[in-house]
Image (cartoon, rainbow, N blue to C red; front, side, top):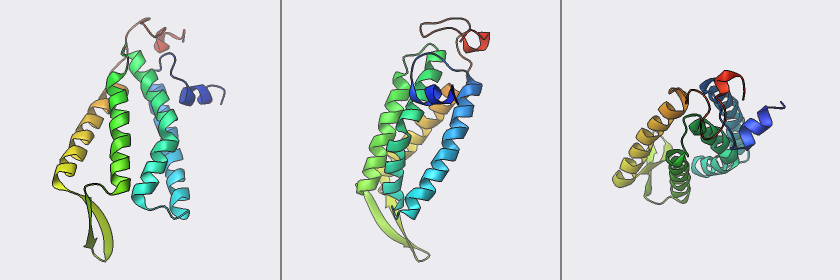
Length: 154
């Protein structure tokens, strides 16, 4: 627990892929529990997603920035992704470019074609971010952001 709080609340230093995946699993469990609570409180899907995004922002931001630091990056690509995700969550919650349709007796909100293209592009960009954060090895040895977490010195 002593290392869990800084892992999810600070952006200094570097973390390994293993540590990043550990943090992602923690956030996944927390997100599931948060969504259960939000649904219990009666928030619909789009507003619930926006609220969950805001609540989970700092831990996601902290993990992503530190992981990009491990690859000796200032994380501009990750920061753009987080901003884009927030804007899209807000657009969806406000219903901008969305229309309602009845599917098997359930009202579903669907994006317009141009907005669907933006969501698709964001998903592709998200795939790039996951590859950067979760699958590519960090810089060997010390870099601009600190010692190599795999050397045991971090």
